[in-house]
Image (cartoon, protein in one colour):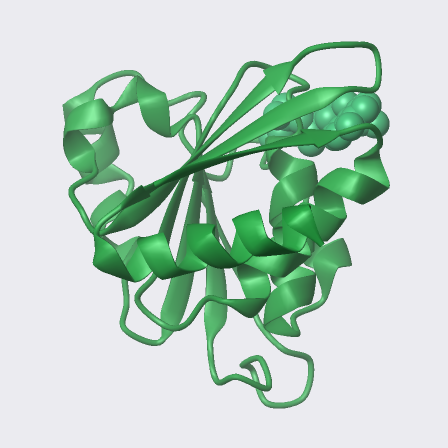
Length: 165
Ligand SMILES: Nc1ncnc2c1ncn2[C@@H]1O[C@H](COP(=O)(O)OP(=O)(O)O)[C@@H](O)[C@H]1O
Ligand SMILES: [Mg+2]
């Protein structure tokens, strides 16, 4: 199941992320694709908001591969999860990936969002949600969500429904 959404502003992209985030739970994996400036980090901020985590803690990773976002008081979101925000932009090869602790960023009580997931396509196995962001205008982005696995089909169905509303 695929749902395609057109966003015309940063805020709209965050709102799409928020809708995705509200439907997520520990163990979920979101693989983001799209070039520089496509809106991957922006969408991740929305996902944090949807999880009840502080979206301002979601930043463009500089030289850190994995950022962990926790709730301020409990260390977790109201839903009981943390967020691992991963950026593979600077990862050279599979050995690099292994050495940087990427595979530890998958946990049953954390949601993992990965920017530049398409750099390592072999790493992602169903179930996961693939989100492809495309720069289609100065402030326009096309956001295509592709469910891999049954669990994410329910989520893309919900997204499609709220698009129709
Ligand atoms: N509709 C939109 N959605 C998301 N970002 C947008 C949109 N229109 C313009 N922008 C701009 O595009 C950039 C997206 O940045 P960012 O989310 O960091 O991208 P990425 O992480 O994919 O490199 C920001 O500067 C933002 O202001
Ligand atoms: Mg980014």
